[in-house]
Length: 61
Image (cartoon, rainbow, N blue to C red; front, top):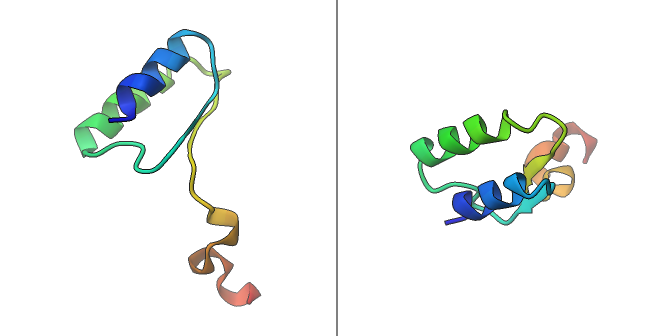
């Protein structure tokens, strides 16, 4: 779903902020990880609100 488009963006030299899910299977995720490692200066991340999600706030709340 998002993996082919993410790889296309990397090939064009673009950073990627991908909507979730970033991959649908472990195989897709591993493929994306392998491709991402070919472009060390580029950032790839999933658009998930980790900073503000209650799961990560824990003791801070």
